[in-house]
Amino acid sequence: MKQLNVEVHQGYAELSNAQTLEIFGTQGAKTTITADNVIVASGSRPHFFAASIPRLVNSEELLRITTLPSHLAIIGGGYIGCEFASIYRSLGCQVTLIEKESRILSGWESEAGEYVGKELGARGVTIQLNCNASFAEIETTKTGVRIPVPDRKSVEADLVLVATGRRPNSHGVGLNALGVEDDGFLKVDDRMRLPQPGLYAVGDVNGISLLDSTAFSQASVAIGSILGGESRFDYSWIPRCVHTEPSAAAVGLTQEEATAHGFDCMAVSEDIRLVSDGARSVADPEPTFLKIVIESRSRRLLGCLVVGDHAPAIVNVAAVAMRSGVSIDKLREIPLAQPSASEALMGALRKLDLAH
Image (cartoon, rainbow, N blue to C red; front, side, top):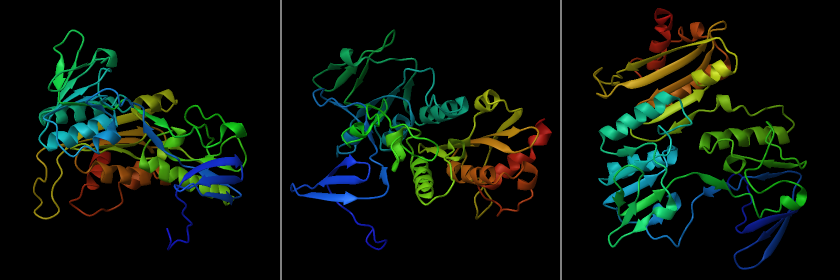
């Protein structure tokens, strides 16, 4: 930050008006800053916080625990729950993942939840779907916690991670006094502007997508808007990733979303075995799942989903292709290093006409 000539202040900040910020330091000192524009990037925190319930923790509290539980139960099968299930199973813990929906990763393509769930199960994670665990019924025992599960055997664990979403750090910044609703995620337009001129909000605090890639893109749009540019934020361009083992990544529209948007589209999916760069041998005995969605008339790439160890790298290539607007016919002509993970996307595109 110093090398970039960025002035950093530690403390709690509150807006007294749209251009004035009062910063209260840890020692009680107050600093006043004025600016033409203010970007709120105060992030989010876990939705669950109940210090009075023993052995129930949120994701931030779990990271502060330095000993491994013998059995970790996780309530919530979103990307946070799945990632921690993968991590703690790799560390040797028994892991049970409890999800109220009919599949994990319910906000993703159905194949993502199916494949990630299958891989987690193959690695020893017990997944219980259609289970709506009630906090009021969770019991503390002498050795751990008992979670009653309707019509099934109760889950007994040493520790419970509650991964049921996150809430924004929007209240207390002084926005409400300026006419900006701050009782939830902050509402912004496609240029990241809040209703009050000169105020912007980026990242988790606006709730559009709680991912690093989204925050980075939104920050670029906000800066562009401040500098007089015409950039707009479009979530369909933003890659997203779940860092499980193996990982899942996606960009663009799902097949269902593309159809709902009125696109005449076609889709192809397949399992691909990736080969190593060195010996041209199978690098991973487990296949990489790849699904692509194409607009039939323009033959543009609308969406891409990959589940496998190299999923982010493959999806990044798809994101570049989507953003540039190149047709799949032109994309297939681009030579890539072989063998490589990125070549898997090209292989699927070449097979598209054969599949239809």
